[in-house]
Length: 189
Image 1 (cartoon, one colour):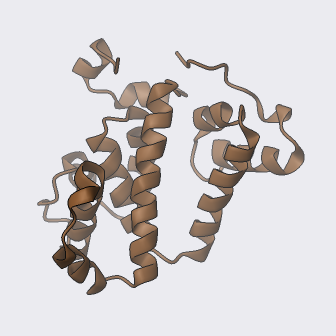
Image 2 (cartoon, one colour):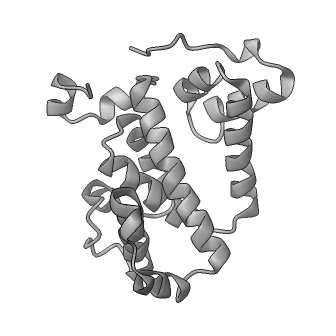
């Protein structure tokens, strides 16, 4: 059950209402998250506006964005984010069994770049303080510096959204289906 009352888009001014509706009904079904963010309209506008601009710019292929987001969300055990991003990763051509295997990167559906993205997402999530220069050499061999910055931003944002959604118990029905049976019996404290 959400820890804050979900707000309808009607409480927002027109521009923010459009962003809310886009994320609730268009971009993907992030209705529960939009309803929580509506309590702080500037956050809804800034975060969702930035995500839309990043998507429009298409600087970083969506496959890598979604690989990073699902990896981070699984590492952080965020059922809301996993449930909402796994379908987006499937749209990018990643088979269901490969998605289910994440955060493991050894599935044959993953190429070297996929594996690097998964590794980077894991390392930034688990120990960003200990990244080696050799990792960045490998990233630079496959990505521009702009793409590396965006990938890092997407990993960090996924961690933010994981914590936001878990702390406030943001839900819209999809997250409950994503929990494994043990997690349903013992949700995050």
